[in-house]
Image (cartoon, rainbow, N blue to C red; front, side, top):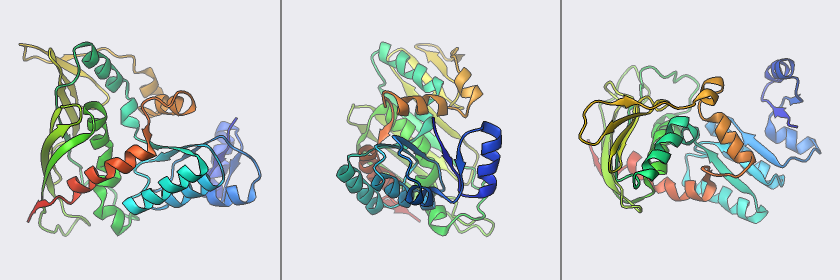
Length: 295
C-alpha cells in the first residue's frame, strides 16, 4: 500500500485516475504536516532546488527509510546537516543513482568478478549542453551542472572501480557562449582508487560525445556505450561482441528504476548511502572546480 504526494492538484488527479491509488496535492511538507498517516518508506522525486528541505522534513517526521533523488543537494554543508538529522532520528537515507541498477551494469560486475575484478577504467561525461532545456533552471543549478547531472555517470564509474584514493583533475574554462547560460567547458583527469584501479576521464561540453564507461579485467574489455547495452572485447581480439542480457525490466520501466526500488524496499544492496554521498562530494567538487583549473 502506498500514497502519492504531488505538487499540483492537476497531477494528483491524473495519477489518481490512471493508477487508482491515494493521491494528494499540495506538496510533501504540507502533506506530512497535516496528515496523521504513518509511513515506513518514502521516495522523494522532486526538483533539486527543494530536495534537501523535503528530505529533512521526512526525517523529522520519523519515516525510517528514505530514497531521495540525486544529488540531494549542491552544497556540502546542506548534506552535512541532513546527515546529522538522519543520525539523530536514526533514519536510513539513500541517494538514487539508478544507473547502478542497469542490467548491463549488473552483468558487467558478475563477469568482471569471475575474471579477477576490474583493473582499469575510463569514462566520459560529455553533456549535450545545446540540447538541454535551460528554461526555469536556477543559476546555481546551471553553474553546478556537473554535480546536478553528470554525477550520474561519475557515480557509476566509481561504483564499479571503487572510491578514488588519488585524483588529478583539470578543467579548461571555455569562452562565454551567447546562446548558452553556462560555459561549455572541457574536463579531464586521472587517478587511482582504494581498490588500486587506475582510472581516467574526459568530457568536452563543446563537442560531440556521450556518457560512456570502458573498463578492463584480465581477459575482457567491457564497454557501456550506451550504458543500457554491454559489449566486450576478448583478450588478444579487436572486434567487440554484444553480451545478451535480460533487460526486460529496463524496457518495461525507466531503466534501473525497478531494481533500484526493489533494493530500497528489501535488502538495500547497491544503493548509495547518505554517508557515501557525503564522502563522495569532495570528488565531485574537485572535478567541477579543480585546483589545476586553466583558462
